[in-house]
Length: 292
Image (cartoon, rainbow, N blue to C red; front, top):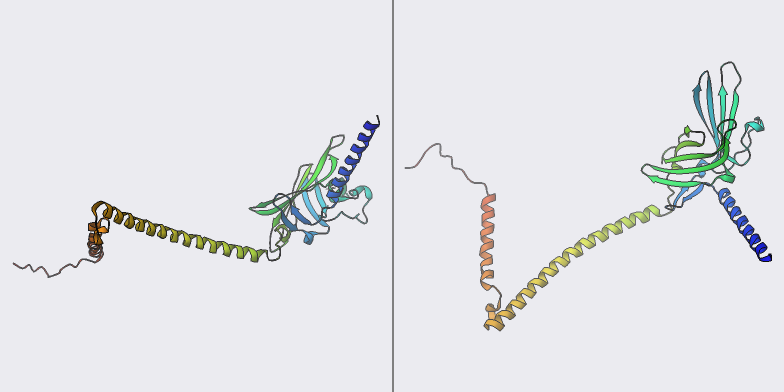
């Protein structure tokens, strides 16, 4: 009985430690990002602070205004002059407010949705090279799509495109009641460059090019060396064969001596043939005179 109790207490302790470490990992997210899949680093500190994005949709006879307040690096602060029940709870990093507008009537807030919260953030990161962008998926609270419906997990899907020159305004692309898609272009969407990284890369390319040249040069050298060694072996073995078989001496030791004697004449014939082919033929123009 005591042993079972001890095991149960140990299991509770490990469960508590695991839960605390998970929460700590969620809350530890900041704007210095490292993508685990390829160890790519991003610095999002330039995007820190509160941002507000609006989207207007026609819902005749009224309009629906979707307003997203978010901060990638910290939790949102309460808004002054806004009732507490019209704001997302504390610990929210991205809050979607739906406001209904109708002519000649006051605006009416119909939904306040925490699409990303620190306690359930669980960020999922990924990158793409073509086009270059960083994808951030944040998780939020559960929210019912309609009255008496089952609450649905909320998420914020931010696609941060790499734009080395300018920072554009973020845009709400879609919201299906569960996931809000947000697109943004900024220099922060480009991977961070470590000091000396470009120079080292250039040096690496130069070394790689030099290595390729050395490989090509050494390959040609080895080719001619093999040819030279093969020719030397041919002469040595041929001379030994002529000496041991026919008792040859002097120039008679050269294997296939008659062939090598004819080589200069064959080369001369080849060169003369090429010259006659390339040289333009002279045509005689004697005005129709034919000698008899």
